Length: 478
Image (cartoon, rainbow, N blue to C red; front, side):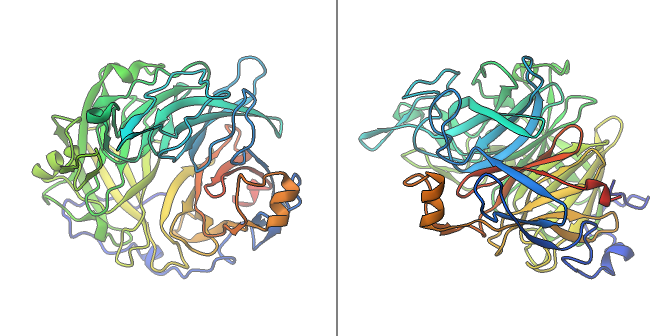
């Protein structure tokens, strides 16, 4: 686990970087406990889609356009994902995967037929009816073999990230605020719960706030939910305290209270300017109206400016981040990323440790990127069962990478995107007209997470839309 030295401070101007972190020097291969990267062949396509350390291999599944087991094509724009449970019939691991799509074909189980619950079927755009393409699919994996995929949620808008719950479900978050109510549609910018098996209720958890959601992470001890906001220079870190803390499917839909993080003795602390090793004492301010609209809503429902929850937190002196993205809760701490925070605007990884009563806690900047080669825009992140931290890049680096962070603050490249597809490659795979010939190496990684036994690393590359299962000698990282 990543740790930090003892001692608490209570101001925005805080400790300079910890000595071990400040003295580090970046080495993308030498710092890696797994060794240097080299191209590795995908057995199903014969293409070198990834660069990995020696001894690691992978399989691919659920490419954009592939037919799902229930019929209908796999949507594209693969994003947040996690293992959420095991299938009752055969014990296969169940993953739920987001699709960061806006408008397009609704995620369906057949030719225009959806077999699960739908949030909404469409809105009016000028004179043309449109449908919303965002939502989730379920994937099944057992003993190293992909077994199939099916729709799980549809009729939502730009489902970017989210997170798993301890009770076996997925919280899917919309990274947009869109008000279609004046045009035959619905209000978007919410979190939805999707069960590991069975139909989703498709009811938004309104009390989790109306804003540009990114990641969701749940404290298993209390069912408190932490949420990140991705809205440039006006992003907050939130927590949702549910009325029903029983920790079961549907319990969060009973509502709760939303709060935004603030820094003690320093109102409106600019946390986007973090330096590595900065430490703060934090508390929480209540958001009275989590469903408040943002600053600007135009005549066609598009929105801009600060979100309604953010403005309420800002009025109470809450802390301000730049653009919050991935989040993960494990071993009593929340880890989350500010994708363009820090002086170089290349990203910050934060750790928040709540006090026992959850009224406040300690906030620590455990890693701040100094230049794009070191880390380019950390986004989705996760910890494996060993407590080791991995995160995905999303800044247009060539190639984009999955990075690891050692206990002393060193970052290293664990995997690199090597997806370059020619017209001949696409024809050989039988995917003509579905995906295009392109150099996809700058496409973002997303949806990183491990199997419960820690032996399989699941992750997506958003374009052209591929899911990977990576295995290898994880024990090399002691």
